[in-house]
Length: 400
Image 1 (cartoon, rainbow, N blue to C red):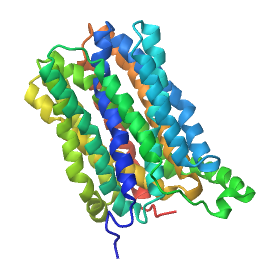
Image 2: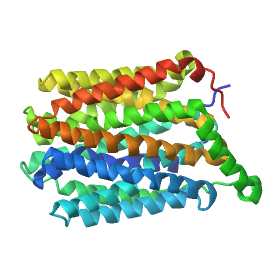
Image 3: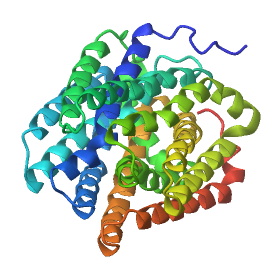
Image 4: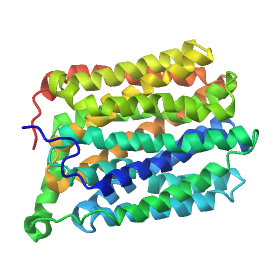
């Protein structure tokens, strides 16, 4: 009998998921606009995003290992959010390229790993992640939209004001997340997980992850999709502005896709149950290809705005579907590590290399963003080809 998506899930976990995504929704969609206000070109902005992503080659694996072996994941999660808050506090005083680079690198290093750590944290409380996680994750999408409503109201009243205040929103959300994490029930580790044999099993399971061809396929696909999707996050909003969309409407427009996420998440379990994980991943890749295609060929604000529906489908069908699949592959003792390795290879290497190339493409095209979206389309196509190639093997995956 299937478990209802809300059955035995702590109410505090819904609160943590909601507020955690408020941090990203406050800062990340508007960071390119804020950096432009500081006088930076897209080449310089791309360099900042690329260097920030390089920190994921070390830190996410470190946080995942600490969470799995040494410190309860709730405490690691609280620490990262506090440090993200302090990084934003430091960022607001920066005016030079070096200061902006350092402050954003610090924020990115502490905040971005929480996107996958919160998945690992959630799985500890879910009896049936495949059935329940989509419903829980929908609260994160709602949290992502909340700051956009506040930002829209602020910019509507104070037209032409700086985007500096988004940093204050991010700081407040980080602190609230840290406090709400304290409300979560403690996670009880079995004796086997904390004794010496458990430590030996941890490293054995890590080696098995890297020898698992299915897991490595998912890492490769996530690497390509994350690099491509970073263009949506960082360059979509300035492209809207360059095509006549007022700054106040940027937040509500990106909420179009997030609202679709909220509607789709509860039905993800039915889709996966009927069509399988491979179909979900393929759907996400195709949506990302189409999204970049529209941004490459069209400048009509309505077309650009409605393309955010495709963005929401990428999050639901690819990112969440892949995260659940990785949870099935990984042993219980290395789930946080398996999730944070996605950050290393996906949100780290992927955006680092892709944003480096994006900066060069924009610079050679007289600060135009169209070549960036063309490159994003190619990355998404490569991920699609990889998933299709390994599809027969991925369909045979069963829970660890």
